[in-house]
Each structure stands twice: as structure tokens, then as C-alpha cells.
Length: 164
Ligand code: SF4
Ligand code: SF4
Picture 1 (cartoon, rainbow, N blue to C red):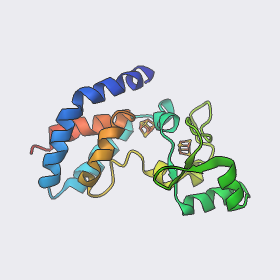
Picture 2 (cartoon, rainbow, N blue to C red):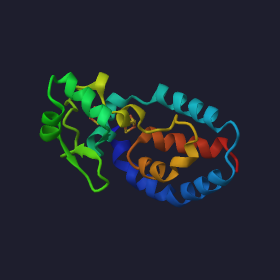
Picture 3 (cartoon, rainbow, N blue to C red):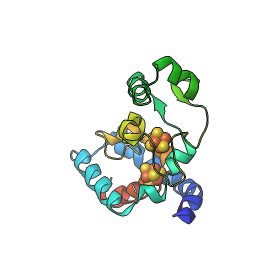
């Protein structure tokens, strides 16, 4: 898996123009059953991809924390919300709460998330390949294919399956 992760930025760069063209067309003419196709491709990919052998998202890009995430995780640690914020978070240039550093503070050496059951919504949804109206997050996906091997494979399969 580490070889795949190491090669991913180059592979994603090589595919960038092709992917960009594909998503531009997809935005103009998304198939009616796109949500269904994406769910299928996502489920299929994640039967093969073991996130515990990867954890590249947790190692390279921290999630943003919504107010609900902050409340839930602070409660999990039996901390006051403000105490949790001062200990773990900062406000970024988009005014979102994010972690001070990557890899994520809550990632274990075994790639397990120590707050898995209460992890941020952004972590639960990453790489967003099963979200509805997938064509609306193409800019984000163009970045995610360089981080997430599963997202990369899903986009490659999309291009084979959706002829536009
Ligand atoms: S909170 Fe958990 S799932 Fe989210 S980035 Fe950190 S280790 Fe990964
Ligand atoms: S979501 Fe993607 S980047 Fe994150 S652990 Fe799973 S395969 Fe790796």
C-alpha cells in the first residue's frame, strides 16, 4: 500500500487534465442515475481497499471540525467545549476549526482512530465518493485523488463506466 500512496501524487498529476475535462463534461451532462453509479463504484472499491493499511487522509490532511463535532468530541473526553478547542484546535483562513498539525492527533501508530465512534463528520464522509450529486464536488475530488488511493480508483472506474 505504501508504494501506491507514494506514487499517487504523480499518478494524479498525470491524470489531472483528463479528469478535469471529464468532470467539466459531467457537470453539464450528468447521467440521471449518477448517485446510483457512484454508490456502486464506492461500495465496490471499499470492498478491496483497507483504510487501516492506508490512513493517508488522516496522515496528510486534517479534517475540519463543525460546532457539532466539537461538542460531541469534547463530551467524549469529558472536557468543556472551550477547553477542547484550546487544547486541540485552531481557526484556519476559512474560519473553520482545524487541528494544529498533521498527522491527526487522534491517529494511532496502528492507523486506528482513537475517537472513531465520535470522529468529525468530514472524516466519516471522506473521500465523499458516495455522496449525492457527486459532480458538484469535482474540484475537491481532483485534489482527493492525489491523497486517497480509493478515490483515485473510483474516478478511473467512473471514466470507464460513464461515457460522456
Ligand atoms: S479524527 Fe480519526 S478519522 Fe479523522 S483524521 Fe483523525 S484519526 Fe483520521
Ligand atoms: S479514505 Fe482513502 S486516504 Fe483515507 S484511509 Fe481510506 S483509502 Fe486511505
